[in-house]
Image (cartoon, rainbow, N blue to C red; front, side):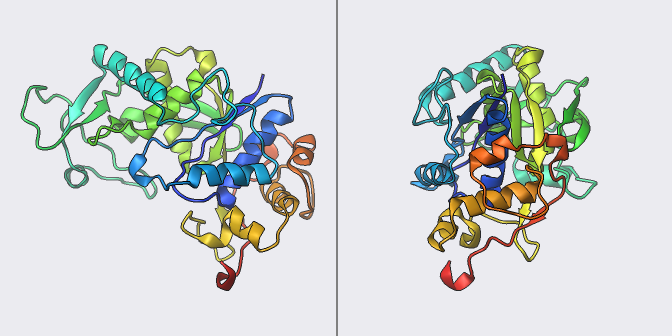
Length: 322
């Protein structure tokens, strides 16, 4: 059975880019009679905006996107909120298991120190951790509270077939290096939390923005190292960005394209859903038209026919009304 998830971080209100991935994820499951999961990724507590999670869930419901499993509905794979103590215990158990295998080590490097020693040779690539602390003695005096990094194996080539972008191959050790699993402030890192959640929740298809495509090999590697079976690893579809009409990337701080601001400006849910479905190519249509989320699922095209490049949205509230 197809099981998809939408996993917003409550660092602001739901905007068109989030609604775009939510609709695609939801429709992919509903088109085949599958299940949908809403997971709140609030692991990065300093960035969380109070009340944002509730507003996101309210906006999703207004759009007609209801979830089979969620923080409100519960389900067999609870908890559906990453900050829940039960979820944190799961992450820590995996972290301890990786440590017992000799696959982790503490790192007290600052970002500035890493940047001085490393380089990102191609535009858009992350800085590769140079391995400064990889072989340092564990009992040494730390300059600052250390992060915990994964000791990425040399044989770390990961290949997956993205349903939209095609085949992607990455040597994690060469492209990223030993990446962080727990931050120096004690918070579990995104890569660990999302990998464990997707595998443990039985997610079969991850639909998300394409700026996360190069994170996927790290997450697949973590699933392997954490002992999940090959069948537990999801399929991936990375959808392109929604851009403002001026070509700039939409941000949560921009109120011009939040769902609540569009609703307050008088747009109907079917207007927004129809525009998003047409912009992403979810439905075969030469022009946008009003559609409900269920109508999108009923007409859904396979992911290989979805749009593969950014979409410039005209669904924006004039600044004076934002």
